[in-house]
Amino acid sequence: MSSRENQAGIFHCKHSSNGLRGRLALVTIGNTLRGDDGAAQAVCNVLRETVAARVCRFDLGTYTNLLPLCLAGHDAAIILDAVATGGTPGSLTILDLTDPARACSAGNISATHALSLADELQIAGIAGCLPRKTLFFGIEVQDAGWGKGLSEALRSRLPDLAGELERLIEMCA
Image (cartoon, rainbow, N blue to C red):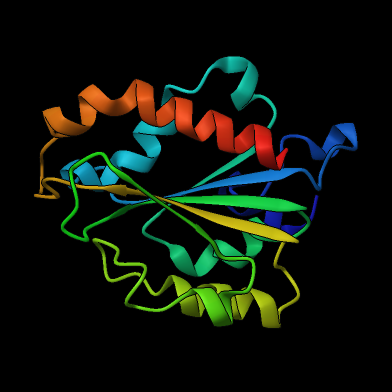
């Protein structure tokens, strides 16, 4: 195991010991202490066990600068995050970020924690860490206030959101 993988265990791909590294990275971003900003983690927590076992899940919290290390060595990735675009709470924005220079801009990915996903993906590309396919799974928030759990609007949508994510995982895996 490399020193990168040893750092708090965050970069250890659970499939690497079985020779399966290179499949799908599922990366969650968000602050679970800020209400709906923790939507990505909440959706992944309700995935069916059989689906969750097939992916390498990395929970970055708000440490998006570690994204390239999570993407490295995987054929595909789905990045989940909360977004605030003014849409209906619990609605989805799914973007193909395979070419981040073309697909990413502040205008089409609006995160709740000032994330520059475009910059992080471009850095991953320069470092040679980008998978062949990268998708963004953005979950529209209602309330990202401090010290609150998920809003009822998002809590009620968790099964549907997990179902949509599972379909996306099936397409990418």
